[in-house]
Length: 475
Image 1 (cartoon, one colour):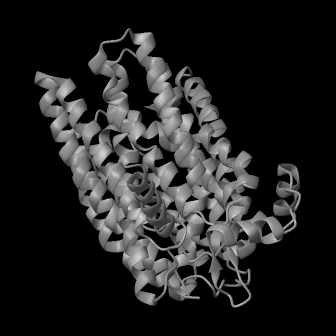
Image 2 (tube, rainbow, N blue to C red):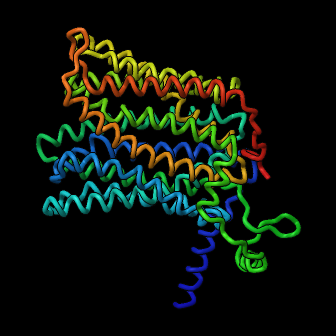
Image 3 (spheres, rainbow, N blue to C red):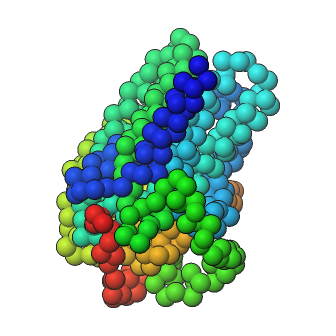
């Protein structure tokens, strides 16, 4: 009996080692299959973000007795969780392979499913608030820790000449999955809101749990083109041989975080990519978090109209994204990012010009411009970082950029909230027409985007790109 358990344990550990530490791609087909699996995993992950945030999370927290002010604070925890990446830099550098880390951290997305079970226990509102904060922050913390590793992993699977095409197709698939499931879950929650909302929470929680499993399974099926210790013939070593090689290798003193930051910011290309990300973050967080309340409370647009317009333009975004991706591969990431960033700025301007008498047509125009922008802005920002970051420093610099921009976004959203309160307390009129606080914030966002467009044109597009020719290549 003991021998059987020993053999079973060794068999399972061997299987796990093969899946998470020995899964090297051996052909172009392996690379392609891994990219397909990442598309599935990312679609599931992005859908979880939507189901564990926004309207759904706000509905859950309101039902659980969390105040509106605390709802805003809790949903901002994602930005603070990104700071954890900075303190894990030396840990990331000691890891030879990222697959196991990414899969383990992805498993913590099940914490978002557990959120929707809290109302079933009928705890006092203060207990509900504490449990929601603990589960939400824990899930966000581990997801943020695994994000730079997953970004570096997928970057190593996609040849630089195909990045625009692949990432745009991946995002199109994700948008379609998100739109469909959000529509279905919204209908489910609306239906059970009238009868028994707890049933609706259980269904959404179960959906998130299934998506989390899909995410982990798809990541586990991927290959990782990253070797640990190799012998004299170039073959990768595992088990006792790898341990022996590790012991023989002289231990290098880990670089301190201030030293890493100094090295990163002393690099001209890093500074340029980081500046673009920060300009986008400033424009995004100064106005976008407050636009939903502007449309509903001030412009009095019905939910049905907003959802219908959003769904239609999501289909347009799905159609447009692959075409923009292929165009980026031909013309360059910077050039396409400039065009789509300008579309995002025009979206802010359209919102700034929205008044009660023109709310419907301006909402349609703003949604069209937003879908045009979001079809590539995220891809372009990531692509710029991959183009400008040194391959040997990519993981570390992605971590620095993500963590610092996350904290910066959190601070900007606080500033935006303060400005919103200030402008709302003032009687603002122009030519007898009432001016809303969100209009001013969107105008500020538009001006920041204009500067970002200028910066991309004169400081990003003029930079020579040293493409990493090892990405997407079978060793």
